[in-house]
Length: 295
Image 1: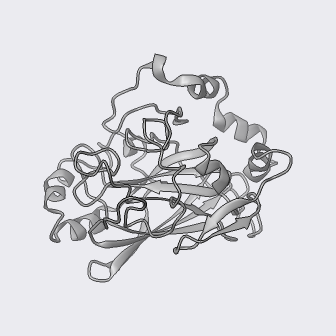
Image 2 (image 1 turned 90 degrees about the horizontal axis):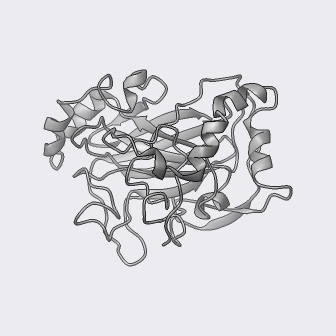
Image 3 (image 1 turned 180 degrees about the horizontal axis):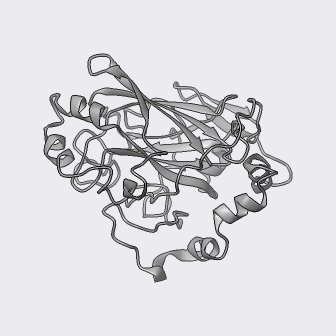
């Protein structure tokens, strides 16, 4: 594991909404202050993000590692738009990665650990095989260029969230030696990735959510390269209520009653309109959370 890599979040808040001191935001913050990303997208609107992503990976795109749920890597090209464009779509807002990203921006870096490229993120890997318990949750994300609607093929997506007790692996007391509920996947020909996980808790002060980062490819993700998008997925109230009524989620019942999408320090700007997952399934059979991400 390595440390320390500045995050590229625009909001520079910790998980509880406290602003990080400006002197500690690093070079990436200074650069992003000078060049607003949305202005760049406006300038290059006719080109689309897929062209910009290709430029980020250099003149000769190197093969990147991908994986199935079994964790077997294969060589694939840098992102392209093989899926038909669906037209422009709203960009998912940039959000804080919070204090527990494990991407090198706040201490530990799990991204350079062998085994991080995987679809099933329920268990720890490496020195531990502990499996996180909870209601089954499949997370399906489709990554598209907001300017053109084209699928981003071969992009790397790093996803992480807390466990049933509201703890984050590698950080929270008692699970600092675990690395479950963290993984990287490569987008397929439709720009899609799928993670097998468990439903996260609601901990004090935050609406139930899932973190993710998008990279130009998996090679950049595991090498702590530039982040294209950092944001969060909001889980819908009606499913939260059903899941938190089950055994093991008792603490979440009280916590979720004290927060709403309109009061949450991340989603309150717009109620999470572009970040609320579409849900299907049941408590008994598990749920699937789906979201299209415009970047």
